[in-house]
Image (tube, rainbow, N blue to C red; front, top):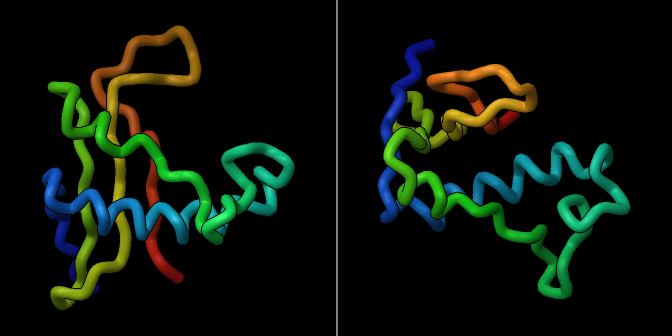
Length: 97
């Protein structure tokens, strides 16, 4: 299967937030009881701060498509969960089932 990796732009914010709803749903069983894993009054999970990926110079958001059909995303930044330096780190990664 061929997958196209497309760098997202600010015009893709709504698409990324929609995909993040699916991503959060998949993780909600682990995040239950936390703000991140509970639905808001409007029936949606809280929005992810994706806008940061268009404000920081070395941060990027990507969409995955196959046969021109959207199938996922990746968010890449320079932050790690350790004290080690990283030029690039996959912050979030999602492919639909």
